[in-house]
Image (cartoon, rainbow, N blue to C red; front, top):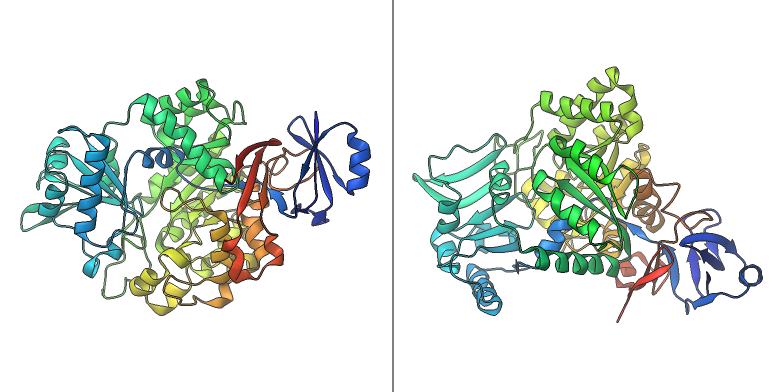
Length: 524
């Protein structure tokens, strides 16, 4: 059965940029052109009147954490909490409303110390009071650090004498634990926390997909798959729960197993996209690895998480496996390590450049590093929404010059770097239109304009979440634009993004989302 879309703007992200009508058959785009011509070609068909809206390619999520988004729906949200008292009230309310029994783990997320009085974390005594009968873990909004109460620390066997793993920290003050852990120390601990029951988690997976679809996203990513997660993805696949395409980026030690389970081309809506490593931490959490010290310090530059040898080994493995490597780099020292190792490994494995290695976040990349990235075949996926969500924090942490230059997208364009955008969900909601607004405006929450020379056009921002994001996944032949033969992954917006003032971009609404021509989301 064919379906004809007409009656609005159809923004193809191809040449010509606009078409009158679009015809879909069997999940793929059959033709675009004049409405009268396509009506004649279609014959008897389903007709979809766009009623003045704008139809675009479905947005492609270039980096997020799908399972964590699902799990976040089962956890306490501390979004915008500004005092320890407010945190305690939300946790207490969750325990009561969910009937959490004494001894059961309580997990909270979206905590941000930058909103707390004097930017300070709650004390261990306060953490104990939040959940006196339950082990409690609180994820920082960055995902790179967190807090635990005494019961959680005891269950995990953490004492003041516990050595922190390389690239991590267990905070001790006056010989006592504070409850604060960061980077590898926190990440290793949360692996040991029991997951939700399978039924609960599968329900959350369905709701997580609905959330992504509500923002016009048709392809999603899980950006750090470890061994414990493989059975979850098997269950999701085997139950036929996926209505979006899911790209898995696996830790290097489980890539082989993931490739055997899920293949490297979309089958049953899931595939092993490649490998993931990370080289530093969070700029708002002051763990991103910088070439120059943070503001207020003469020598503290954050720190890295892997040696050069470990980074090179991951790159060699990716080259030998003929697969993509994506790498978390926030600070410019982390980006420098990535580029240094990539240049060295590509001399022996030149195929690595053709595998489109990706710098994830690139938040504080120096403009001097961008030309090198382009020469080495590296892409950058910018978390450009930092300009709004933490721009004021970055000005405080890095000073007016470095802070204003975060996410240097215009410089990336000038240097020939192909880039994408993401939201690192669940760090923030997967709101592509807000991200496009951020890239075009570069305004902080307090209204500060961050280096306006790094603004880009709305069209270039749209490319970052459509054609470029499809390219990042080696799916440019299937997705990212509206063209004959490509899958009919589409989003219907209330207005054409190219026809509204840039300051109004985030006011645009997602009305419908289509996966392979089938509507999977309609705005209520």
